[in-house]
Length: 153
Image 1 (spheres, rainbow, N blue to C red):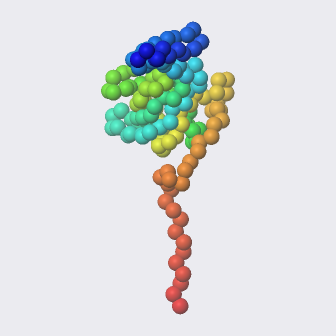
Image 2 (cartoon, rainbow, N blue to C red; image 1 turned 30 degrees about the vertical axis):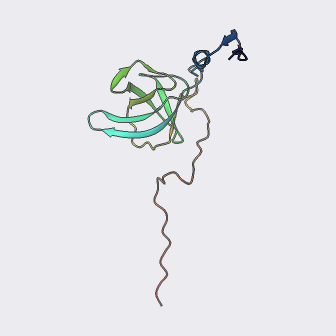
Image 3 (tube, rainbow, N blue to C red; image 1 turned 90 degrees about the horizontal axis):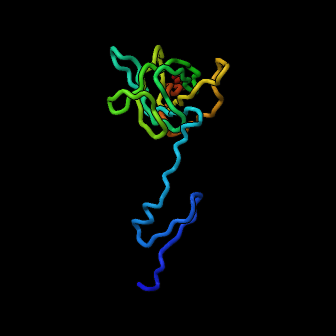
C-alpha cells in the first residue's frame, strides 16, 4: 500500500514511529504502580484457619504490605500486626500494587468482606479518615428487624 506512511506517537521520552500493529503494541508504555502512596487493600474474603489464625485476602491497590507492619481495618478501626504475607501459597517479603495476597494477622475476632486495610496515620494511634461506600446489593451483616405480630382479636 503506497499510500500508508505508518504512524507516529509523541510521548514524554520522545517520538515513536512504526508501520505495523506489532510496532504499535510494543510502543505502549506500561502504567506506573502506585507503590509510593498509602496502603489501600480492599478485602475480598476472610478465612479462619485452625492453627494459623485469621487470613484476610485481597488485592493491593496502592502502597506496599509487609510482614511485621501495623495495619488498620476500616470501618471498624481495628489495628493489628501482619504476621506474614503470601501469594499463591508462597511467602512474600512484600505485596506490591496489583498482587492478590493473603496475610496472616494477630488477634482479630471479627472482620467482614469489603473492609479496607490501610496504614495507621503516622504519629497518632488514630487511622486515616476515608469513606467506605456500601451498596444495597451488598450482604447484610445483621439480620433484618422483624415487625411485631398483631394480636388476634
